[in-house]
Length: 266
Image 1 (tube, rainbow, N blue to C red):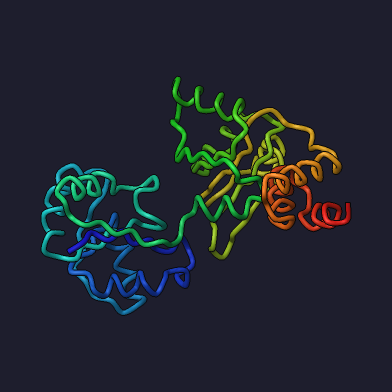
Image 2: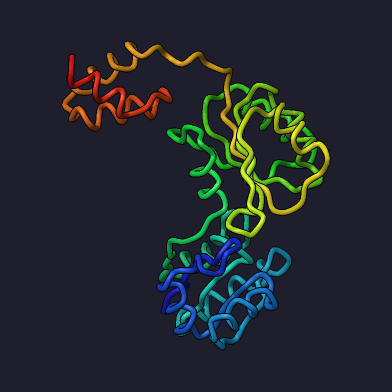
């Protein structure tokens, strides 16, 4: 029997998949961070299953036990919201199952990090997930320096009462998207620079927050002819004009249609 990693909604209950619901109905045991929260989710879908609290404070003790149970029972692992193991408990159980030769299955599904990245409007060609930043110390300073010096999209979680402080420690001109309460009634996505975001949220903020920051020094976008020339180079390497135009557009922020029209007309 397998251990099944089951993503659950990050806010809107309609975001659970049919496969996830079937898996929860078929499970012999559901391991979860908070039995009350998971109990409400299961009750909403009229699912009755034994629940076992599995969280950061007991996972060292329970991981071997659950791995052993997964030999003969179908064990589903859920977190409070989103995909388990992504800044949530589950890694020790996963490793215990792998080391014991127990099958592990992971279902695709909701993820606050991926949802925030998609809605950010920032390039996602190279992505670095940082989870929660350390609250203080050298590790925090080093991660903030990395964001300043590396041209990647950095995805991180932050608590409401530390948001403004973190925004103030980022380069003021860094492009950023601050997503709050994703998929919920009061969802908000602020897009701008870190400095602008710090001003926007200076009065306080509530809810669950995900930041997507474009790291590195700001770059001047290439002019249109440079973008078209880049696309021509991709065509010369064997890519179709459509794919080459799309790739060049993604890399530079220009619109694919404009690049494609110029590419095929020249």
